[in-house]
Length: 348
Image 1 (spheres, one colour):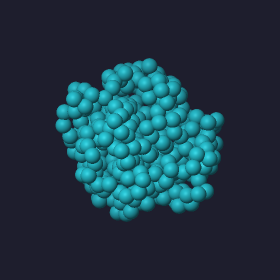
Image 2 (image 1 turned 60 degrees about the horizontal axis):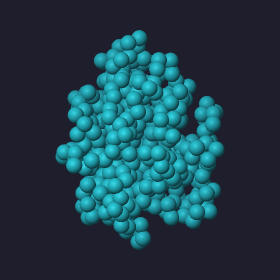
Image 3 (image 1 turned 90 degrees about the horizontal axis):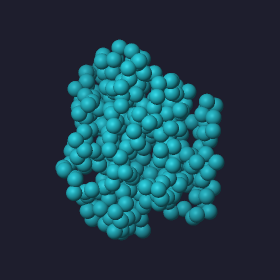
């Protein structure tokens, strides 16, 4: 298991930046896609100047703290053990190095539809807390905005891959995001950490198609006051990635940026032309009363989508220290549902 070694923290980096106007246009952004998601990329592209985005972000992220501070009886109404806590509230239900992970709490919901599509089988309809009536609107508005911008980026990614991989299905990623209705929104509350060597979120690759992610909002857990990232008690905290050399780099971000990370399903479908990168949220353990709050949308294909690969698909197997081997989780003929279940099994 790869563990945190801040001594290996080499430097920080500024992710590749694309403007919202570029995404709306027919501009060729292949060089930025290559820099962000290619063989030597760091797996992240950020989008700037999205109208109204910051307001939607600030409307939702404080709810992460509100959820975490609900009475236990209220949170239990939002827990769905019968579907392994994949909808509603989850805290201490995931495992970190073999023990329950209490460092963060999560609230999951589909940002597009409240009623689970029939093809999702065991998936559950959304559940919303009655004591936080504004949560549903804020969650859906930001979630759908992230997906809308994600679809614009996906249109450029589809063109990039098709120019390099002739067997690629034109418009595939854009179609997944626009039409599959199976994405998962995750509102995350990272609890204050004091003197801990525990990562707020361990090293992993996302395994959906594309992940949209807000920059974090730091909040005083007691007073509710928003804390500027520049005022944090240590600067060894934040989103980190491991590059192809195994070096740990900290992402330098500003709150107006919307992040998009390539996930393993796109790595498979693109025959390795888009590559996922291991990432983690680390903390120096100096956060007595400060929580970290953020929101991610995992843009997943529907479970029955066949993950088509060519006869020789060895190019998709890009392995990383501490990340469950893709060879052990994916084989030809799998659907996304098969791949999802094989991946989840490695973390339970």
